[in-house]
Image (cartoon, rainbow over all chains, first blue to last red; front, side, top):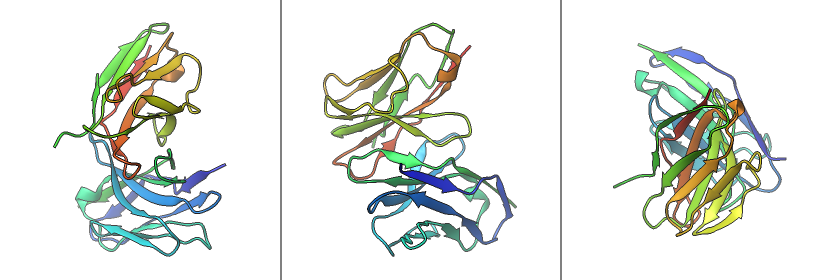
Length: 112
Length: 112
């Protein structure tokens, strides 16, 4: 079946460090891929998405590239801030109006 | 503008009690999803509505779980005879025409 695997946390970094959170997926066909973020005390928010191979999603300095050959969608940011502390979920969907399948989430702590 | 709202935000139930969780989607959104998020896990799909029609209920874990959306707007997730394993955050999401799903803040259910 369809599934998402992402690196376990927590991940602790110092401010301005480079961030990578690994994500791989298993799915038939060509799913859409997402990163969602859950800030403390807030609901899930879409951070970025990519809908086809080699697409790069980007938002708020975060980027992820849809790699079909490695079935990966790793999240990167060049210089993290304390305000980036949150839980990050990698996810996929098979199509419009289809359910979203989430990974288990990676908690990120950024130290000042 | 108003986002997805859910009530109550917190619910404590004794084992065996029935509970009802409410979701108010963004006005005009056709699609509505329910997800269950256990502690330390990613959200898992429960059920999906398009307007008032429940098109997918494959994720409901048992026949104690029931969802409805009688007028194609507000939705209620009902859990009968609650068990401890039902303790989780229940998330509702809505979308306009199958594009981005917007999530509510969730209802945290604790079954004692």
